[in-house]
Length: 299
Length: 299
Image (cartoon, each protein chain N blue to C red):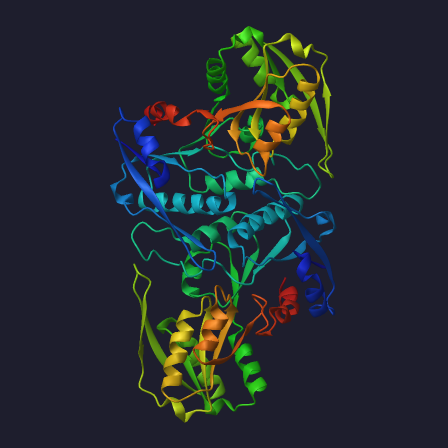
């Protein structure tokens, strides 16, 4: 039997998704002290079997949740030293700080991965990390990398009733090129790349577009791994609208949507936003809990 | 030559205190991203010598600062792999969670210590940790433990112009007994113990006092390792005042003073608060920077 350990807030959703599996669910309690310290507790940890699936989102409130994740791993390892432990981190925070962009900077992604590896999880599950090759280099723990962008794309197509052949996919930077390329190959749509150059000091972003006829398509999907403040997406969307296509949509695996990202996107001409629930939002059209049955079997 | 790495906010204070030493000072920059992630940078890290003293307070904003501390250690180890590295953590956060008070709880202190040890500091410096024997058990890194409560006591005596023989020291729980015992032996004052019982579930505190004539002393000093919300201190102070001594003072190494601790203490009859600047407050009468020259020499 598999034990799923997860925050109480996700109990219902998880149990609905894995109802055909032989699992028990155990919740996590969190106590906050007046001095800002946090304390995780898994009251029922002794009920856990030796196959444990831990689901623990880091976003939002990332640094507090990171401290809690380490505490939860410590609890599991203390009470279930030799359990087979699969850790699902739906959105891998700090994944964009995967190299030292400037002299003297921390390699934060490595700090996160190393700290987690201290507790010897059997393996980690990540969804659409920013740069998979950096995680391959840094992670001391074996991991499974799942991509949900194909599912998000399929469901967006279905919702909008558009044929993939009438869609232009745009990648807002070189790093995502392989994603739109793969989607295009698999579904038979066209793709274009936008090169984004970010000034390392000021953070200012400039775009350079490939020469393509924007208004020759029923819709334009801008595809990225995440939408944070939506600045990049909004910049690309404005360009698309200015070049004659008003059916522009934002697609991403992770919908951080911080500050006024939604307003910014809609103002720039984006008609809708689509993503997964690695971060639950009203725009989440694919649930990663659909992958849980498969993950339980792989334990 | 020794390199001191510390937040820019403490540069002036540190340099004033170590002015006779052969040191260079290097600051730490911190960037906050809209998604809540933080990034530490030590621009001048290449200027660092192979003897490094890192001063980094965790309180307040403990969990964010803990993530930053790990990043800073990562930077130092990347650029100065084999440096002799002394890490000063003035107030060791999570030091009260030094055992599992309830089934299934995290041992947070161990989590903090283990994470820091990943970066192989040469040794750690702590001031008046709550329970030194738990740190001895848990720390994989050698450490130096310094007590500042004697200095705080001496300066409080001087400020109030009271003879130690006319002072009653009270320890608000069994765990601090050795502190008031030592102070009494060294300075020739009297001491008493108050037993505090905290309900593990509700957190409610009840006291039981030793039988002593409270009004037979010029002043009563309640001595603890830290003052957080001031609840315990206030309870003891009220008892002292009710039993006829209105000259009651609160002494502690660490002045967290969260929520409305000051108001609570003064309302309960406490006349003044004395502590160190492991957490800088207007009541700090001893500066731990006075210990830095000695620490630099021990590097």
